Length: 286
Image 1 (spheres, helix red, strand yellow):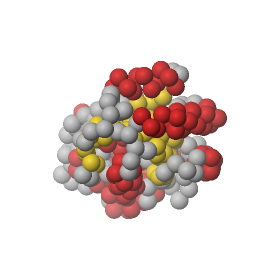
Image 2: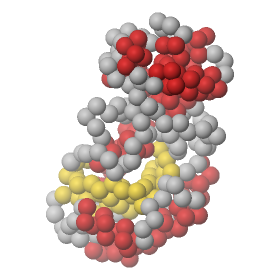
Image 3: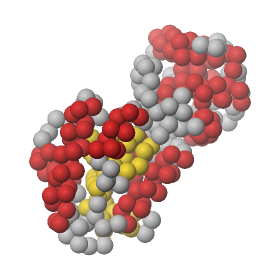
């Protein structure tokens, strides 16, 4: 399965209208709108920890067991990176290692200012104690590739220069890019322990649909087995796109008066049809 960015236009998930929720017997929308990684997860936030997230979690556990070091998490688009980081930031330990976390996006500020801000969020990084500090730094996700690379290199140089004072600190650079850019970064920083968060399998996405509907209070299947498989296939490994498709399909089914959505109801050109129905339904249920 390719890790390339898709040309499918991004659309934000909005909460389903009460009439739509009532039609499907739901208490809430099955997926949540994307939120920044620095925000703590809400008690009601849907989070499905698929195989890719489990592997990333174990990698980070192994990373923090080492003496203080720098790691790199590269991620494909739409794989739930922000949700994973938000939930990592709420834990007080990884395995048997007690940790404190600070999660931040590196925007337009200088490296010096960014490090100062992180130090204020999670201090004590230059002391030895039983609690490790983990910085998870989203490296300029909205910037061009060259800028992301420069910032990753600058952070690496800062860490290497100050490593003797950072015995209690683990820094994880989070770099979102397509597969070619991942190779570029990996080749240039091969000495840094790294892990790649890749696209999800169709099987994992099918499980994700079921978990999201149960979390939303569903007591009856809104989709046939074949329709669920079609949605997972159309998501092309992206859990964020899957959320948009499921929301749009529920709106489509509500407008059509369906009691259960079949593969035939979704149609052959799922992206185009669902996107059109999503826009029309939002206007009619607003």
